[in-house]
Image (cartoon, rainbow, N blue to C red; front, side, top):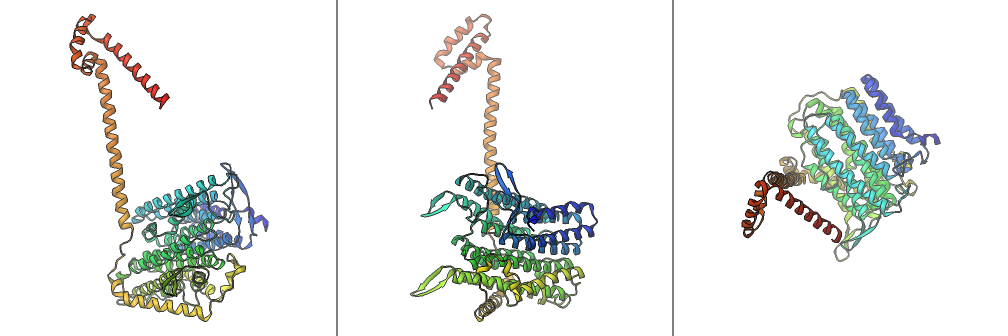
Length: 609
């Protein structure tokens, strides 16, 4: 199977994309599903190793590099991509939608299967461009959201590229300097607030942080994902933030205290803002931020259990989050409504949508028997046992800060999906609506089945996890079941006690409501200031030009206006004695002398300053 290393899996999807414009809708979607399933087969069969290498700008790009991390990413990216294409087909999307969907998926797969930073950055930028166009295809409010999305990812990609460039010049530049070697992004250290950090790592970390929806850099996520067609949202839920998690591991393979606590903060922040949402997809979008935070916390812990748990959670998250977007999509397609408070109870008239939602909700909430319970438990164990973050409260009493931050975020997750289910399926007068069509029932049913299989028979996933040989899992121990019970109890308590407040919230006050106006008015002020300076310079240049024209046309007046008053009588007498009395001879001569003097002065300044 060594010949499989010579085949970039992204190429398989790209070939399918080339067929799409020339095939019927059914054949195009069928070929696309087959191509993504072929990526899964490739990932399962390809041996570990390095494939073709090409030189670009003096650097070697490894177009295929297979290890436990890239293999797992290719499996889930290909598998869920096939489900997303099939779901889009039954949502009546056209070939153009499919074409740009594949144009988004292909560079995402490239990004997680190349073997160096330069190749990753190339895929990162192409993915940003194609996903922006994918959002724009829906028109309407998605166009404006797409511009903000593009701006955010343009800034993030630029910061990542800057970090990679600094890293390249900090190490010994060579053709192989940017290859993944297990050491991450380092570089020349600098002192900041008494701590030693690498500027390259900071820039790359912030650039990656934009795509992970790090707090303060996240508003593109809840603003964009609810706007396009529901089938587009299903795709978006899978790729961008997960490639960023993968990149975060490549950048910080040994873990990071900062990364761990940033991730735990995201878990709380995302769940908290999800509780304030009435828009179904906006609620789910904030939960992407929350769940990605748990993944980053696991990577930040840096232990085998933490990293394996983070990637297990990434794998499981794509399944249950995609499933939840499918459930929301079924309701939106049938009800033509995005907001939970704008329709009555549909639980009895849409049982398929209800079951799909319940399986996704129990998976993301960490209920035993579902896949989220396994992976979330792994990260929580790593935070509890493998990470020293105790905070002493009184005497010998201390709490594990990172662990309890993840617990609080998990309770918020539980509460917000109680809210989603209550308002969508139980609250208000029962209404009649059409349930999911047969195609959506089959596709979402398959994804739901995967959430259950990997929750009950978790051993099926373990061999494909990074560092699986170092794992000793017992997720259904009494201690883990007890953790699940108090997460559920906490979530129920938050919903019951906070429901009167949640009823009045319509999105909350997020950071974008501060920095969007600041950015708009700041940019407008800056551009206005630059414009004012330009106008002043323009007036000066134009005025000087007209004065020169006047001086040439009437040199006598120009010269007389520049000399001191006490010399003007002498000048006038000389002017009267000049033959022809035009002053031209005197004016031209004086002009030559002045020009020579100015040039001499400029040359002296250039030589001696």
